[in-house]
Length: 98
Image (tube, rainbow, N blue to C red):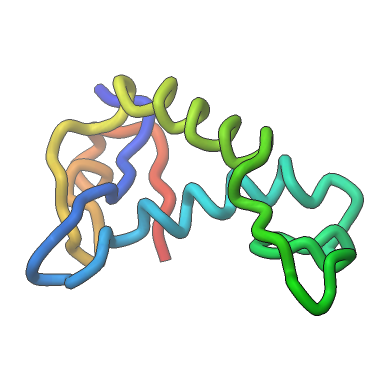
């Protein structure tokens, strides 16, 4: 039994990393935008017109730490399928999918 089934693979079939990057961004947003969307996400809105990037900050670092900590508890099968077979078979407690 795995704690979570999460698609997190770089695939030549999908030409993307499935949902892994989107999930990382979703976790990072909760750290970066703790006062709402006015804080920006990818760029600092207070630095117009230059728009300083916000990717080098504690929020993104914490999101990466989160996934590093969670990964050992996810299913080892890396897939880019639209559904997760391990979750459907009852081998995971939860999944994040859309």
